[in-house]
Length: 333
Image (cartoon, rainbow, N blue to C red):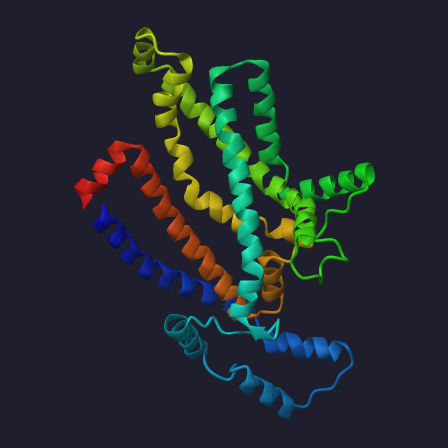
């Protein structure tokens, strides 16, 4: 197993290099660059900029160098110093932006993940056991609703309901009077009053998909003979479910760990913008609009790294709960 993990980590190196190259190429595709956008914005406001100032800013931002030279300098800084470069849009190091924004983004994604799995797994098992019952139809309807309704639209509806019916403003991560205050117990309680909305919205889409997946796999397993034999031995229904069909039906759910956690992290970009959250989503949006290549590239790299690590964790979890996967990995190693 250790050799399997080691070779999987080695395989991540060329994957991350390829992701970095593709991300850099895609970011460079739009015409112009950050300086072009900035000059156009200044001229639109009535300011005049002479060519000498343009040349000075071009050298200051390193935009006078070829794209491949800037790419290798960027990658070299990441590998040697952990330096993701300088953010033109935010006028500070990208590392500082990542530290200030990613923490809350990870926190929201983790809470959404816990809510999603904590609700989807028991409900998926229940509706499979109670097939064609009222509860089955109800949660099936909720599942299609969660998959069909866009997250940003649901965010707008819930914001309106919270304010119109309960008089609660849930936009942002904190109330206006708490935003500039240092962290305290009162500010944390205020955060909980706002953070539930993005957590619920992000969890709804993932929950709907997981319930439908677990229901389908559970129905397949419940019809197999080993379940009938277990019942014939006199085992309780709960023990039969937990020790036999659930252990097999849960595998597709565990295999989604890699993309589901990344989806919670990156899939809520529009939701974060709508809710005015001080997280990584609005940061990426602003960086893309202003062609801030280093900030956008760092975000894409982190998403790629999370995807690779999530896939590895999914495989390890599958090996832990399913001996067939574990023995297959040992034979492959």
